Image (tube, rainbow, N blue to C red; front, side, top):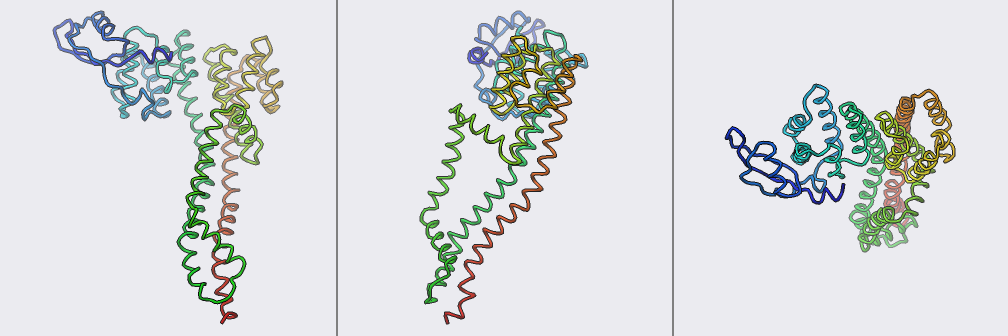
Length: 405
């Protein structure tokens, strides 16, 4: 797939159709010769074919998950209404406001027009359509239920993005407050406290210990503020790079994060919700359980669950039931295992997994709301201690000024 994506380019063509009418358009292919051959098969005499400059979508561009979700829903709706696949791409593509997304859709349309299977055309753009998406489309094409699969994909992506947004929102609030508090502290240390220091220099007496400590910190900030900020940025970037490159470090971080108070519970429930939602969607689409587990592992968002799911896949491949393999890796609560067991026995595994996903998504929502309520007074107290401490430290000498005089 990746190799095909490298060799395939977008071409702009002009020609004359069977009725002598001048026509033009765009088409994706490996060479201008293949484009001309395709046009001739379609009854068009090509006059000019030239390669189009690389567009934004080739490198990811500004295409978001929401764009892909809306595209999936629109395409499914068009097909459910009886509109042919190629014409559906034309309508959806031409009507899209995002230029990069429009070019992506029309490139896929060109591939499909030239005889390429839809799953292969999507596979040429792995940055926008991941393995899970392509696998489900492949299953939908083979089973003749492509529009149903596209609806399921759109629903899956909507719920997954909503879950991610909820978690990001919960983490953004305390991080934003901490950053603001840090900026305010830096401003006080660098610009405000030096003014008090000049005032205190004429007192002719020793300053209170707290005031002296704050003034010493202010001097350090004025001289080495760039070290502190650079160190924080360097540490954050370094840890992110290390997590990407070191499997052991990534495993350590993800395992520790699951044990953090409150946050760990949210991350664990989120991973379970993603596991259940992804497996439910793939199983409902007719994807064999063993094949589905690889995509499910990548969707969990945590390396501990990723490795656990791959271990489950290997056990299932040897004939082990899903419920047994889930119990063996000891990552899932007993309630989840029991619901999966009921689903396997009743032949409604996808429905049970969907109920598990709904339950845990709601649990994440409740936990995030509780976390926000818990953090608000804690953050206010911390800010009060920091800012209040600085203010008190600066006014202590003024309170004792009578003794000095």
